[in-house]
Length: 522
Image (cartoon, rainbow, N blue to C red):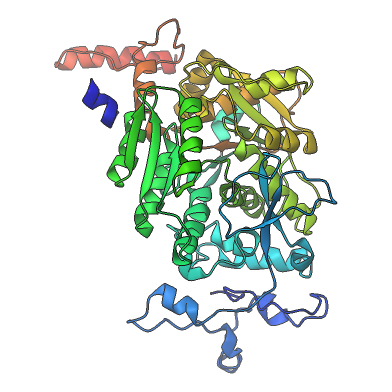
């Protein structure tokens, strides 16, 4: 039991040619105008040399190639108190190791919007689109393809990336039609990422900054986090890539084996602690206040800079058309704010003219935001999180509660909840239409179903459900459901294997019965 517990280029340069003159006056036509197909050899030979992309020398890697194409710019970012008064003068450089404001509140990464606004929405749309699917360092990453909006001042040599992001946004055609009467339902599968969850988007940013700090000889000997699974997987993978020690605090016996094995395989120092996530979070905060270990939980606002790029990706994938709704599972609640921030930056910088309405979906067994929302946003009170199959959001005292409330109020958002039976049924229904989702996505789909039945979300509304992790991390919960071994749960959509004798007649009898149930004309 103890052992089980412990193992339990393009038309745009990769760098924008940025300068002080107004975009309206700059000569960018050669960057944005596609080359038309032509049969004339003279026309082909007259193409501008700057549009020709030659393969780098064989003895040069993509980092070295990137060093030859460094462009200067005047973009910058800094830490400021979250939702600070406009007259506040408190701020900190990103190279300072700090997690809270002087008042003890959350911090936020604030970009120099005036500098970014010197380039119009069309410029940014074209720049970001030009980088999708490329291998140019570091812009092949869905996160670092938006580098100017993420960590504009970091040297590309300091970036630690697995070319994360650029995740699939797919049309959930059958699920939408069969179960919801919708024809424009989409799933943003952030679980199709390096370690199998959306946490990679934020961790590439945080670990890259730590890599920079260590090169600057800042007092950072390692990076630590409290985790219910996915955060530790992402942290350990990116730290391993950079050769940085990682320390993980996990609640004992509360995460899946597939999640636990990831940080172990990546060489993290894993502590299995007899408490829940909130207890692990309290301990890691105390430890990082005393030891030179960098805190990697979403209290650290750097992670949200990477996570916000998923919102920008959604807009890109819809060719910069804004969906009506985006539904995000919520636990520690940093992600709902990150999506708001990504959408809001696109609106403020002229890439789109509005933002979608956001929905935060919580498990009923760990629903402090839902209770707060239902109270009319009166005094927030943490709850004791009970066990839920959606283990990554089993959090009763979320660090980013203020961020989440801000994002939901600004987006005219909604909070919904899902019981254990509802989320498991939703997961089974989704899987039966060809998906293989995590329980957290089941929470989001349950929220969608409830809002559809209430008439809040219309059948023609373009809706995006954010899937936060890969279903392969939660196979045991799926096995238990389809085996009908979950106590006090009907498991209405279970599909257990049928035991049959090894002879032709028995197999034929079973198959005929099955086919008749599917097609009465058989």
